[in-house]
Image (tube, rainbow, N blue to C red; front, top):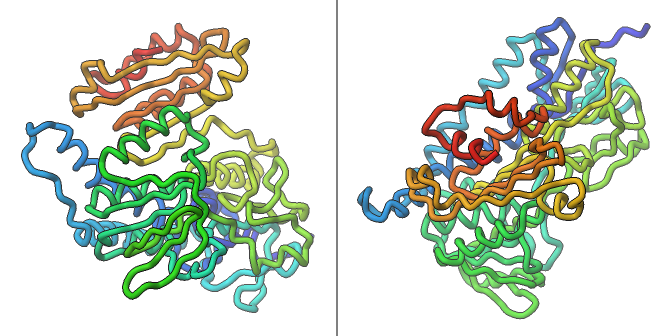
Length: 443
């Protein structure tokens, strides 16, 4: 048996790596991690952690204003202080993760990793070998292919803004576009949200999405629908955004048109590993066509949501496989997901659209929560929950729009994943009063 430098080498140090790499090293396996930028990758540095810190004052502002004077003040956000607070909170993460990995026995390499053989990765030209290689390089922002595209900015640059521009054009109706439109509007920017067609957040229940967009419009956001971006052009200190039917002059442009996989310069072509901007193709064991090379996290070409918890699940799956604890194919659970708008939309399991397309298999139960007494705690006027049951009355899916939808769906997730029966649900005695109790009471 050939002797390798390591049992497993990971390229990338985000959740697709460290959630599994640290326990794997703790089990005695020889593990190395290669990182070309900040330890932790996108999520803690430029994604989820950073975003939720910036969003905290936004949610607080909306609750304060909804209190109708019970809590005084207008909740004006000081964006410079908000950004500084965000930065102070996340600046400690890379060193903490690095320290945690090294303490568990992981060898850290800093540089660009290129796969030059079935068991070999070159780090800035220096080869290291491993029995198995894991690619966990994640995604990066997509950039529009139009004249003047360099005048557009990405989500990373938005979260680094020291001051909120007076006017902002946001292009794209995905998570980033709609969430950042919510933030910028709350921080005082005059926002124009440009959608390629009339819809946004395509993976979510569209009646709820329409309510989120209507709420944004009521707060002053201009939504420009059915427009294709033609070009960006500098005009003094401003930028002209040319669309299909109109031109918008703005102070700042956020290109939120999606994310693409980091698959370049990894050596995939030489090894004939199938890949595209959507990601790297894998089998049911997360292996590429080269059996010793695996993939974890958002860089996988997959149907499952490309989210931090999904990457964490995949990393832990590979940990058990490499530790010899399981040789089973990956079995994805119900994956909960949420849009951090105000109000939020969250969902898990079978979607409403899937259930409505198969009425012989599913029962759809719609609940208007706005009149429930508990919603008065947060001054909510818009809260709805749609539950999906199978014919055995087991919960198989849920989606909610409310100020705390993520908490409700998290509370319902175990019932969806493990197929609780009505009798089992009766045995769940939740804290009262709490948002989870309100949601579970609808089952």
